[in-house]
Length: 401
Image (cartoon, rainbow, N blue to C red; front, side):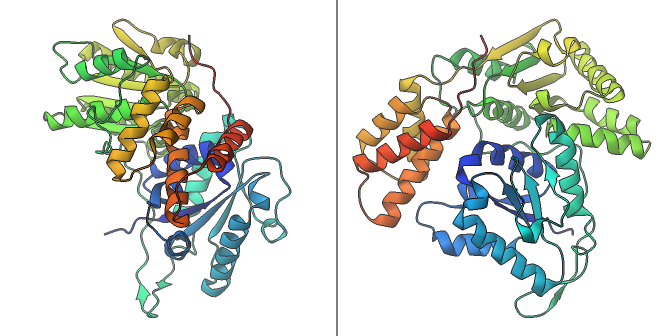
């Protein structure tokens, strides 16, 4: 059985939106990611868990940006990575260039994955995946702490789709005026005899597009449907592999065998002539046969590709949550975590953090961690620090009208 490759991402918290997108794209290729905002829970030892993540990782991806190169945490994590390279005699630190910065001297001789331009995202992801899955050094024997050799894995296999994430359901999707109609429409997709099978979910970052897509897939699967989920980069990469291996018919047949397919972030498709024609052909066959298809993006379909705008398509436009929606989201996260925090903290976050739910939840986790580690209640100074950080680092994505 093949062991999953594990990668630790070292980064500055200021770059969290990019890092989340990067992590999602890497996970779509079957690589396990250690990310502090996902792997740390209230009550965990910060230093101990980060040290464990660094020790267990097969590779350490360092995101190079204006903020990260001056971060003491990133410097410490890099030092551990370089020391491991020396001890294990293999390459494991992979530089990712997010902004125009001077690359640290000890990394200057390495080829880096360039993510400074959004149009290169898919290509850079492919190169990064190849560096991890085909690294000669990685396929040598590694040693456990006891000194015993572990047989190394075979190269990473690229399956066509991933299972839907069970943690995303309609029950835990918080409804508010900006998404309640979309939630109802997506819920109806589970019964293809009663509603349209073709749903497009559009909206900004961190407001629930992927949550709805996974909720649809989980419910359809529970009713016995054959379902599949993939990110656009994974579909594009799969097409390239199928083209290279002369297995396009097999690739097409797999997708046409599904009862429902969800593809996330179609704005990131590499719209190459042959790949575009291939996907559009599958898309129209889904529509003709009544197969369920869910697409998500941060912009209207007609801005992505004209032929994706077809008959009987239900468009769900998600808006940012209002103040009450933000309160409901925060209280829901508290209930799920089993933690508690003062009501005035919830009110402060709900009234001042209006960009998206993901950032809202991130600030809540940050305050809960501070409360735990300090042993003190959250005070006004803590909230002012959050607000200043939010004003300094947040970018509000224009909503689709």
